[in-house]
Amino acid sequence: MASLEIEGGVRLKGQVPSSPAKNAALPALVASLLTAEPVVLENLPALADVRTISQLLERLGAELSQEPDGATRVQVRQVKSHEAPYELVSTMRASVLVLGPLLARTGLARVALPGGCAIGLRPIDQHLKGLKRLGADIGIQNGYVEARSSRFKGCRMTLDLVTVTGTENLMMAAVLAEGTTVIENAAREPEVVDLARLLEAMGARIEGAGTERIEILGVPELGGCRHRVIPDRIETGTLLVAGAITGGDVTVTNAAPRNLSALLAKLEEAGALLEVGEDWVRCRGPERPSPTDVITSPFPGFPTDMQAQVMSLLGLADGLSRITETIFENRFMHAAELNRMGARIEIDGATALVQGVSHYQGAPVMATDLRASASLVLAGLAAKGRTEVSRVYHLDRGYERLEAKLQALGARIRRIP
Image (cartoon, rainbow, N blue to C red; front, side, top):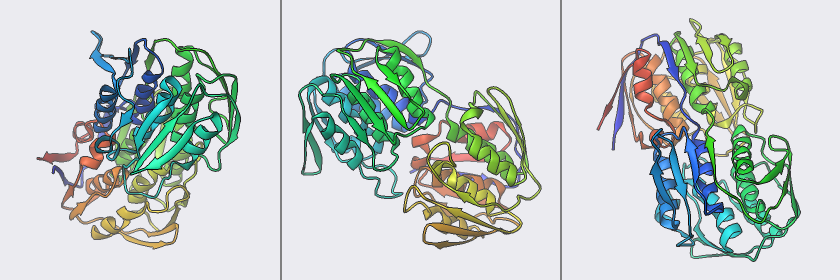
């Protein structure tokens, strides 16, 4: 397995573009199952998860090809298989998104229970409850969700908790339902809004995306379209923290600052100097961060996917910070690895008490999940000496050539095969 070797202590400087959003690209690809016509996606990121979902779509009957301008053309003329097998679904949770579209288009689906990062239970019960409300007959056999349906009937449903993939799955199921479907307590994340834009371009009728109440008027069929994936707010945030943690001066372009308000506020509280444009953010890091408290919450709150990265930053703050994780119950596994580098972090239930230290010391550390990988890379950039981050296949699931972008900013980082 590959690892990343980092010689810390360099103040990062320069300009770097943000990649397209993984969490918008995956549902966009899956939405192609809803039509026999081609869906052309611009700006897809080159990520392991994108390759995995593409392989899954090909298994189901999709034809994928590159357009002359680099866009990806996906066409599912006919669904040839109704099964999403364990060997693909086990590596990434987003594979469960095929469940709604398969049922909506064909009335039959067999999808392995999903895997992905080990950051908590992340059950799919809200997906299944919503699909049952639409009219699906669902059972679980031998680790697979087995579902059948005739044409879905529109209904009103209230999600027990805010779930991004659950909202997306139910949106895609409802666009071909008979009548009107209302989803209450829906996720408001920008990726949900981006999926709604794509579905509307295909002919769907959706109102309220980006609010807690989404209303979908079903249509008999959808057509093809061309769609551009939004920038990755989590990669943008990670690069900004790289500038802050090294006391550097980093500008991230091709960004969507409007989707980063909660993170930008915390960076300013930590002492970073920010300049924000229409599609760029400049971050100048402090000599030493100020302590601040963070509580993760669904959008527009502070994103759980930035919790680990900000923990690395606050580990160097001049004082005590408290980070409370409200989304996933097992998302502090990176704290033990940061402590190996000299951090002083104690876990008290859902809260991490982060007593800042003057510096990190380079050490061999092991990534446990996608965002934990990024937090360890960030700590290595600021550390004295050499850090080796192993198991970076987690990192490759969600970051496109991260080490190359950091190298462009002056980081001394290299991949060891």
